[in-house]
Image (cartoon, rainbow, N blue to C red; front, side, top):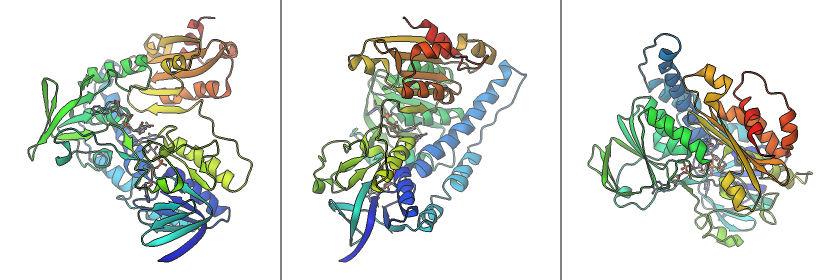
Length: 453
Ligand SMILES: Cc1cc2nc3c(=O)[nH]c(=O)nc-3n(C[C@H](O)[C@H](O)[C@H](O)COP(=O)(O)OP(=O)(O)OC[C@H]3O[C@@H](n4cnc5c(N)ncnc54)[C@H](O)[C@@H]3O)c2cc1C
Ligand SMILES: NC(=O)c1ccc[n+]([C@@H]2O[C@H](COP(=O)([O-])OP(=O)(O)OC[C@H]3O[C@@H](n4cnc5c(N)ncnc54)[C@H](O)[C@@H]3O)[C@@H](O)[C@H]2O)c1
């Protein structure tokens, strides 16, 4: 068996792995990146970027449909072709990672293509070769779509996000399993292109981890756009007759041209060989310390750490781990102000704890909510003004520990709230700030005024 040695081995080149490997190579370390599919990972080829291109186009259609209530008339004839072209040509170069590979090798890195398996604290086996790390190995293997064991499903040509972003046309009809982030973002985007959409969610609330008030405003908009959302029910059987899917959900039978499975993600820790370094492979995630160390000389970054499956988390952790590997002064990772945005319309921006999470932690909690539609800007905006701001305060410390901004630009509105939660700015100081008129974010001042104390 051939051997190859480098300072650092990076297993999986998702957004964090690619970034870390590049930083270390530029700093002069020898780095081998190991990637079985595409350098850059899920986000640029199957995730964030293509889905947001779909959403950008779908939002343009929705805005055009709002013209009639504001500015005369507009005729809307959706065509998914330009979106499919943009995804293929601009976003993914037809799912070819040559540019990303050259970016990495241009910094001095070496790429080994193949499925790697950890065989010890310093060794990874890939493509018949045993690679050895002199300084560290970094795990950035990410996740794959989870497919629930629903009777009949495995034998059908269902979509996950990976097939959905490759479609050339919006299906006539679509059933989506899972009303989480992926399910809802894609359900609304396709519906705006003319697909008839049913969403099936096992939990009683859509976007289960988020505030119920935010889920409610999203649900109202989805319903107004004709999307049928079935909550608190599970699909019991799936069939495909060569043309259409039939999904049995309780007493109902749903039929559609396509079925999208968006029921969460999984990582195969056992298949990755992590038992060889003492990781519990029955667990969903790999635990790390504040410098992203699993153990001495082994780091993990990204979705597999279970700290939030977001590109910004993977990149944040990559920067900390890279500094630590280089022996530079590094701040440890903090997770009290993790921002996240669901890019539905209304967008749901959220940071830190929800009210439920804060109460589960035993905090004495005050909350306040305000509806965007009744703010000055919301009233002016009119069509598409649904939204809510919710603040969660640790009453004993007088600081925000969580906040949600659902509405038009809910993700952009989040920035001020993220600063407040991250820096633990006292609520008393936030009340003394000036909020520009008439912005959506001025509604934060209204919510602060509604807080007790
Ligand atoms: C549809 C969709 C939309 C999304 N939208 C957003 C968004 O808007 N904003 C956001 O922040 N996040 C979004 N995400 C999440 C985001 O894509 C991930 O959090 C992000 O990709 C970070 O993942 P990662 O770095 O852990 O690894 P990944 O991107 O999952 O990459 C891991 C890489 O490791 C490789 N790999 C795995 N095992 C091995 C092995 N044994 N050997 C070799 N290579 C291996 C894989 O092939 C893959 O390329 C979205 C995800 C999806 C699916
Ligand atoms: N905008 C973004 O930042 C963005 C976008 C997409 C994905 N992501 C990341 O990717 C992760 C995965 O997304 P996801 O939407 O697949 O997972 P998710 O965990 O967000 O949602 C999955 C949903 O499916 C439901 N579910 C599970 N099994 C089911 C079943 N058998 N029938 C019906 N419903 C079922 C769950 O209750 C849950 O609501 C997210 O957690 C997020 O971190 C982020």
